[in-house]
Image (cartoon, rainbow, N blue to C red; front, side, top):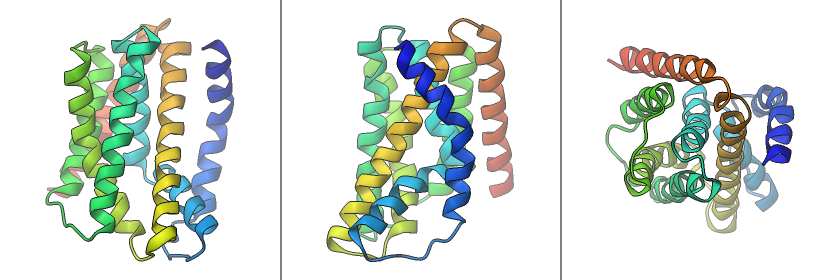
Length: 202
């Protein structure tokens, strides 16, 4: 786990560059490789998605110190993110997507701040419920290509999300378990971001 922590911490400065490389251009490409790359960078391009996915990784480590249990929440998040994205690709209009994404940032930030512990089934269900709305939003934005291109975008999106979860787990294990005030500060900051996003949507 120490090696994972070192790698993820070293990769953090690269995240803004990845996001900027995407450039906010949501035009759709039709090649499988292009679609995969587009899906891969997509979770890095919105501060709401980025904050929520990092928070899931951090919270999973703080709430479940044993690695075997900690992985369950991020896995549930990615699985339901993919389900939501498939719904978005298919054109299903899920109501309340943006408010639910903002609410997820607020709730996950608070969970990190208080280091809330609960049965892993409940934690996975909570994270998975939020993930469905994140996935639907990504699916709407990446919809347009069909067939293999859509599958490529979906695979890239799942991998990008998993990278963010692993980064969050590395942060939680490497810093926040040892320095509780950092966890509380990061959680409060994430929750405030979620509150701001909700107010802006009101």
